[in-house]
Image (cartoon, rainbow, N blue to C red; front, side, top):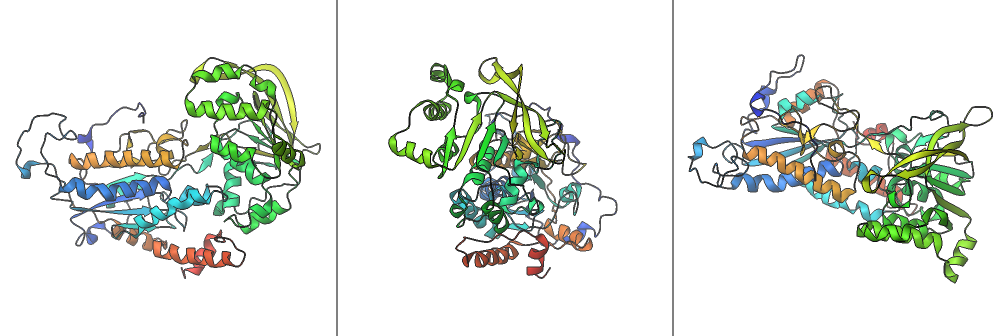
Length: 528
């Protein structure tokens, strides 16, 4: 994965110890006795990036620290010559840190981040990765601490004082704004909030989307947009055996939405969704696709040179748009009561208000054409406009991360923490992984690879002696700080009690679980 082109820093500028922040109590020096030989690592965020980072570190650090170490290591010198330096002159690793402990902090009382709150309820197979994360959490060298918001309950400088290394893996907690007039009208919401609503994200539990109109418009043509369209159009009885929230299922039962349009600025060759999600939409029970054959003119020749995944995806679109379906598929489409369609070469300019100005009633779209070739292809307006009436507008133009702490550099334009291969710029000992590192792109497997790479950079720095060599107190110090501030963390065993409660609540209706969506209820159930 290509690294971002930010400048490197001078490691020599990093002090081996930090003075305690003003007002931080109690002193960390009281918690050193039992952990002097343990490498203390902190991970912020318990989604895929956080757990994969922890998993990689726990698997690799003991192997790394048990290896014979000489200065011809690539991480130390980059040379191939054995310099034969005595062990007492080598940078600290195996002698100082024979084992590692990883603490994972999470602001929600429950773990798993995007797997729990982002993966669609009708994709349970994708959530099987939770089993792997649970194995990591059960390790005696890993601990989960939920209900702790870094930046509010504890600061990043306090974490850096307590741990040898800190990895920020807190994901993308916000959405990109459309920045067009009318975006603030009732009836407009982000796809991120809508996904959070049906998946039980506490901050979105009171969203109350208005599904009383017959048409919804989704601005965006990525996998999230297809997820939202699929949930809107799936017969509710097909969702009854999923972990969709009870409240969301009730609203979807009353939905009057019959048509969903997915709008994109560019054409079929530039869609951001993948073939699996497209195939699901084409085969969606009770729904038929609406594709304009004119959007696909000349495309057959253009796809000959594109990469195979893009070629297969475009060929499926092309067949769906231009070929006559077989008798069985034709009958299925003819009987469908709902429909979805892709509107290409359209860029949103304004959300149109209802006559009384009180809610959204449509979207004004600029017709576009493409300029450039390959990755440089961009949409430019032709000057024509068209209005698309609807009762619900969902923006699905991307997620973005937020800054977590004033002490951490943040690129607000790109929505990422400036870094070089996961090393946070100008803050040695601080790392990042996942979407906050590279931006909100890719699938869970992409995040796994990305997180392993960040873990590898941390281990390279450990091997090179660039992490603090003295003892760090880890969670013992943070626990004292949190206690003094009235914060009660939720452990992984606490989560397992909540998990059992959710499963028990779902059994009565044949669901795998009925998600708890109120953090206060969760804490009450735990006696916090």
